[in-house]
Length: 367
Image (tube, rainbow, N blue to C red):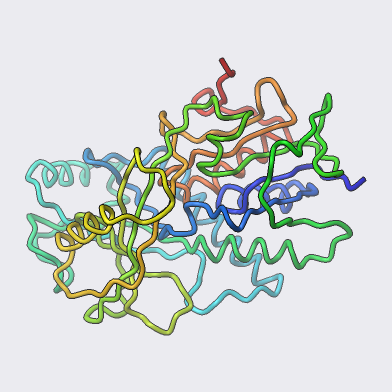
């Protein structure tokens, strides 16, 4: 019977970062089960990392810990892939420092930005506030704030990690491409058996499908649908910025010869959780796009996905309170690009070294 230390269910950001750390840092034997017909929200995301969020311009949660860790993690992963002969596609570095141009349209927001920029907490992230447009195709605004942000090539990270595992010379499979069914899982006193494989711990990194997991559906999930557009802006080739107005516009991190293709999004819908793009989403994005940029554009693609968010806006990670041979890593919401490496590493230490988890993110007991 093949023996694995861990079975990771999921091949998106959470699953790949956790498998990366379990394998590379803890030298664990990991089987990863990936369902191609169940792509994660990261498959349509832009990988934007913005340190300042929300209407009240708050510094994102644990920014001074999480953001430097994310930059180091993606940079390290890029070096790792290159060292293993997985040449990254052209223009596909894993971490790109970006200046984010935030269009300020309300006097209260302008005042908040000026006040925040003078504090030690926010000063490292707010570079400049000016009344002059930084780019010729920005609509008029009260001011424009320039933020130190970033963009990670999350698609290339997950693709390269899975390719590395699939191509590794191993005596047993390390990646299985199929949908995982909990009915195939047998729990023993201290471990689990899945299709004849002995598993020490099964970690579910299923995205919004965790709401259907019989072991973890009790958690306060709050999935939210998001829609985005891929657009061509011929008047703005090689735009090195992220633009934030009615929505966000960011370069498409693809290996395409075209240098004027951009991602723009996104929407939030808590009631329609179907995976398909909608007419409402298209109309909403077009309306917000007109508020964000004045240059003409052409829509290339309309995409949608369900984000695995939580009611407390904190990730789920840790062992099941009743079945310790089961664990979860989920609920990264809109911050998955930066949260996945940080909490993937933390969960790896928790699982392999019994490193304690803070009460803020520890799993509650089922009712």
